[in-house]
Image 1 (cartoon, rainbow, N blue to C red):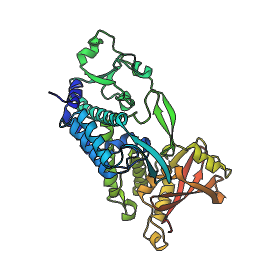
Image 2 (image 1 turned 135 degrees about the vertical axis):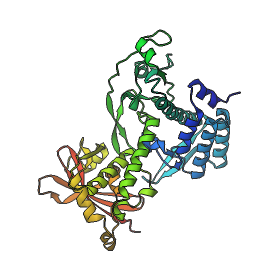
Image 3 (image 1 turned 90 degrees about the vertical axis):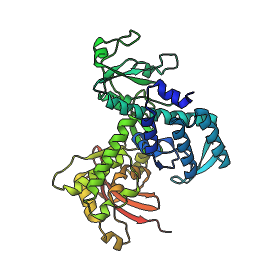
Image 4 (image 1 turned 45 degrees about the vertical axis):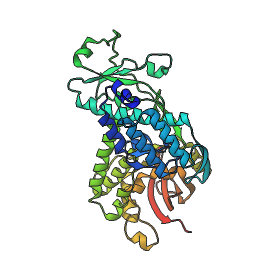
Length: 420
């Protein structure tokens, strides 16, 4: 008899191997203290359970979920064994853990509803990644996808509006709206042949919707990451991406950065192999490396996202307005920062050379920084200057930033260890 996980896979016509491959690829165990600390594409290579500060337990939970999807355990087996592991380690029920980023005690609870949510979210994301691989493999015969809800009174209104939307496999709509599209979302997609698409009717006789819905973005305040994120309306924050496509794209971007970094000065490339940045950070790192490798070809400014309100308030206390501005990197300023602060001479001055990884983390560092007036407070071009000081993982980052009309950009960065 098929297990619950196998039945779930069979219901969606999923090849279990592809879902298992996705779960096994998430081989980096990451401790987080908020569910949004790993954002969308970052889940493609990392496994986490918010506020479970135990590497051994994270490994156990990942193993149990993977074994269930590949058919060795049922959903009930997972719930039983996960509860036993958490109980043995003293994590069952409510517990306080220390968030090292803030120094605050935060509460977490492990109980049956949370275990079910952890299981359902991870297996559905694995299914989605696996199905995307199948969709790509069969798009010559089935070049379209149809969005399907459960069509009952539990369906979210926004998701109901997408029911029977039928679009080409590579339509941009599937980049953000490939289900699941929220916590406990039960939506799915169905491959459609060219003949059925031209016929224009679903198996129930309903008319296919062949026009892509307008994708409306909204701002969402991510306090854990220290930034305002743009998320698709109708989709829970953190679910507005395609797990299968994201995993492939992230791997390709990582390979690009690694290839370029191999030709860079050792100081600029150091630390890349030991860290696991997300998609935005990888793109920013690529921007910094490209700026140095091809100084003469000026790139357009790189934008991370908008300044967090709390960050703007700290700058505002010094009389500098950065509210609503974007956070960015500028080609020429990156070259200056690398030339000035990525050499071995920094070590002789008691500092740590800045790396591409540091530039990729600029938005996060700015989000946790305290501000001081610039020296001077206004540059020769008339734009305000601020000194932003952030402490992360035992390192003090002192950054000089320029406040332009629409963005806040990095001018230079100094690093040193926290003095004990």
